[in-house]
Amino acid sequence: MGEELHLISDLALILISAGIITIIFKLLKQPLVLGYIVAGFLVGPHFNVFPTVIETQSIEVWSEIGIIFLLFVLGLEFSFKKLFSVGSTAFITAGTEILLMFVIGFFSGYLLDWTPMESIFLGGMLAMSSTTIIIKAFDDLGLKKEKFADITMVVLIIQDIVAIVMMVLLSTAAVSQKFSGLEMLNCILKLIFFLILWFVVGISVIPTFFRKAKKYINDETLLIISIGLCFGMVVFANYVGFSSALGAFVMGSILCETTEGRNIEKLSKGIKDLFGAIFFVSVGMMVDPHIIVEYWGTILVITLITLVVKAFVSSFGVLISGESLKTSVQTGFSLAQIGEFAFIIASLGVSLKVLNPFIYPVIVAVSVITTFTTPYCIRFAVPFYNWLDRRLSPTTKAKLDRYKLVSSSSIVSDEWKIIITKTMTRTLVFLVMCIATILVSFRYFYPFVYDKLSETIPISVCNVLNAVVTLLVLSPFLYGLMTNKHATQELYSQLWRKNRFNRIIIVAWTLLRIFIACVFVTLVLSKSFKFTRFVIIIIAIFIAFFILFSQKSLKRYIAFEDNFLANLSANEEDGQEEDHDDMK
Image 1 (cartoon, rainbow, N blue to C red):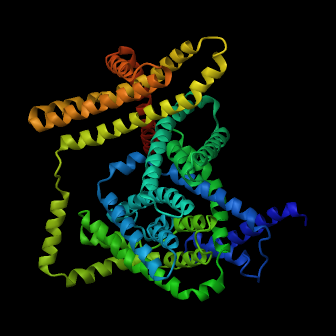
Image 2 (cartoon, rainbow, N blue to C red):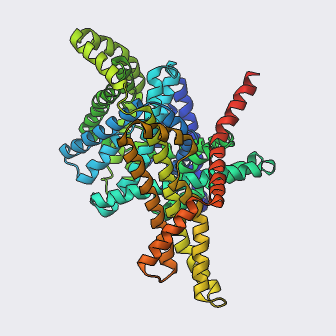
């Protein structure tokens, strides 16, 4: 067989073996992910009884594509609105579990005599649970409608987001070989900036495109456009220094908010299943029995940490969020495993050459063991709670009940809650849009004008053109930055009438936003004109207040906001109409 057919033969071997093994695992009522891993082991280079894969490097490329599609479909199943519609329980649980398990994982790696970077990666892997395995276990046990299952699912969503962020941070740390606080802060701010920019621009543009081109788009075209957008975002994410997984997830989450989100999810499911199977098979190919035998002690230690320590840490996170002891134990025991993101993080460390190759099969072995034990852990949660409840003193139970009542009460007034949530989010969005507009203008528009027009018109005219166009594009964002949304103005009035302290905060917050708007205008003027700083500042203040009271700025701002909000709620309205039709 020619070398050009090796890839075809490898794919045939992978898919046929995966199909046969997963049928067996389905008969045994075991997760299909485990079947893929076992199939990969059987056709991998470390098991020579059956035919083995020839071009392992090509399979690695396919597995990377598999990661992209896994994260893309995960984004399609994700909704920012649903995430923020839940209470604080899931956020407190996820934050506590991720932080404590990261620390425990780091010190466990240190005690196992791993390098600091390997210990950091171990902490990241132990902090993640398996969304795929837990969903399958809840389905099999009929627990998806239980309260603890809802908490667990939101925690898993938060973990997935943190895993994406963690991959960016770990990549930065691996390249620099050190954790610099300034570098980490810069990386986090850069990530937040691009996430907001991608989401706002994506929601403003993509749903509008789908809506206007709807009669020209069938399922085939929709699938092609969606995958093209996914790969386009992957390329752009890599261009600005982020991972392919982040780009795929972001585009999936943007498309999720469109009216075609559900249809795209259905159309891409087959592709996700195909490339996901290749990815998990490639994971199984990394399993080396000799390494597992050699490092069985390490595998046992990490497995016990995952099953025991992680269960208690997660339970503690739910408990301090104000939930009952029973709900806490059930949620904690459901999260006691590591899964697909641990593979992805481990493969990232190996590809960056900061992890010893033996760590990958060790993590895979731990994941396989904890995957098998997940259904039993979920079943064992209630008997363990009953055992624990019988041994707790009445005083301890009373304290837990009292803590639950106290934690559910609110320290901050409802008015301030709404204002902090809406105003801060709104300000952050318009701040990012202003920065992005200035960056794009300075980097692309200004050089374009100078290169194309400077020979035909004076430089002074080019400068005026650059400044005017940039300020026109900026004006709706500057208006949104300086003003309050109409829905929150009444709340501001109520707080203003309550006491003097509220007035000081409101005035200071308003002046700060106007000051930031003036800074942006000053940057644009400084780039275009050679006036003194004093003159530029005076002109900038005048322009900022002109934008604030301009009816044209108001209309452009309203058009931008109405389009964004309409696109953001279109998917929800479409879903309600579908549900209504189904009921009929």
